[in-house]
Length: 86
Image (tube, rainbow, N blue to C red; front, side, top):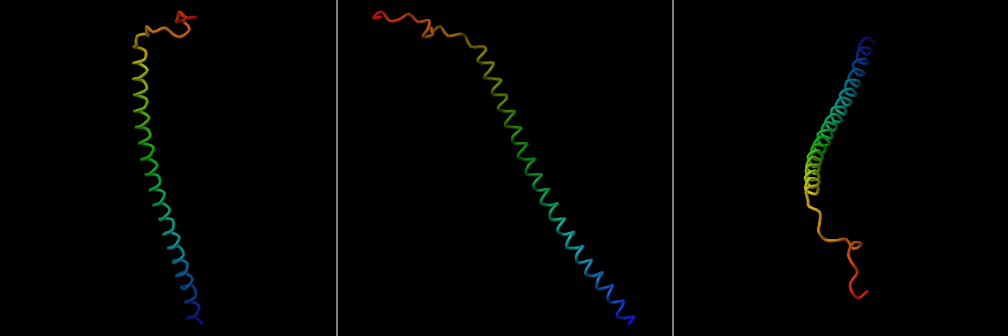
């Protein structure tokens, strides 16, 4: 009976170790996937920030160009005199 009693705990320990190993592998896989996802999101955010900076620069440039433009000498339709046949 002594021999039989010592093998039962060792079998349970082996099963427990296998279960823990499986859980650790699963957790490591999840962490690796999360790291990849975080890196992808970081890359996308970085690209969006660059695009936003470019758009902001272009918009500011256009605003400055519009401010510096001379007003048009062409009269609006309200200011224009009616044609002679009216």
